[in-house]
Length: 100
Image (cartoon, rainbow, N blue to C red):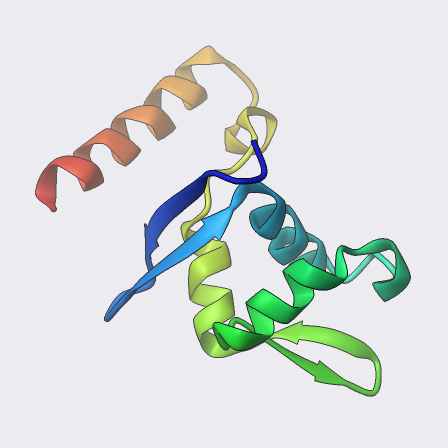
């Protein structure tokens, strides 16, 4: 699972992230996880890809990192309060994919 990379468009280029790197990117975005609880190799790779910067308060998303995070799929519960909202969100995602 951790070895498979997913290709995700960040606008002008494609970035390859493993599932673990995606999780770490989400944890950085939410800012609620201490650095010591995040995978060091994921943090190094995200920094190498310029998706995060490391500051005094810990890692933060760069502009590219924010775009990448915003492109990640959201949990079904965040989409809305019922099956109609979920269906609507899925339809939007499928339409976006068809335009590429």
